[in-house]
Image 1 (tube, one colour):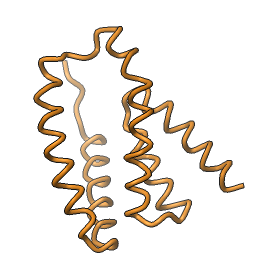
Image 2 (cartoon, helix red, strand yellow; image 1 turned 90 degrees about the vertical axis):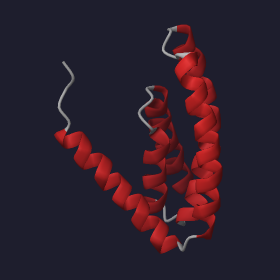
Image 3 (cartoon, rainbow, N blue to C red; image 1 turned 135 degrees about the vertical axis):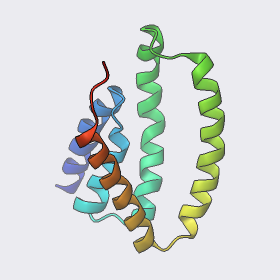
Image 4 (cartoon, one colour; image 1 turned 180 degrees about the vertical axis):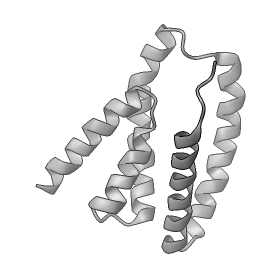
Length: 120
């Protein structure tokens, strides 16, 4: 039964990833809060999950003109450097501290979204 719930969570978060909503973050929450997966392991699974889901959604976004290559390249290069550094730090942190950082991040994003004003 747990494989069925994991498959369902993967399917739902896959749809959200296709929309560009950050389904991987939601999958990470599912794995740590509901499936009992340890934080470090869930993060590794999440990274592996992201590769095929992004590769599947990207052609449609490129085809529809939703990727600005001039903007994307500096972001990609900076992102590569940032993820290398953050992955190293994350693997050295205590799992409880890592969970607190992730929880604080989610609270910050949630509060920011609640009080964000629509652009004109």
